[in-house]
Image (tube, rainbow, N blue to C red):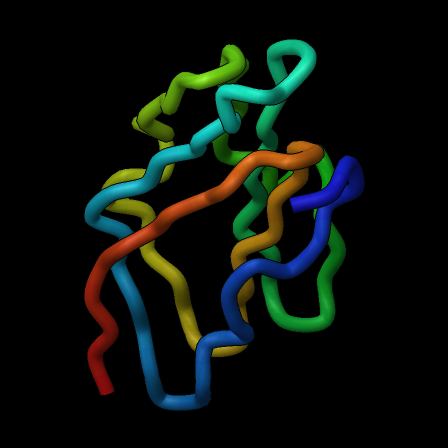
Length: 98
């Protein structure tokens, strides 16, 4: 990921919904410093901002953090997951229903 919010999943296809079951952020061991990770659930034609900010964690070098505030969030048709956190890997799993 980069330092600016960017789309990491989506948009969710029409007539489809999703639910997040697990989410974590990993900061590589070689990182120079902790990194703030911010995650947004952005509506169709929307932009990442305070209104759709759902999670923030600080991830130390060589560590991972669970994004508890994302668990059980629903993703409606047209929505996207956007995130920021320079050099961090975001892993999200869940289910989609058509």
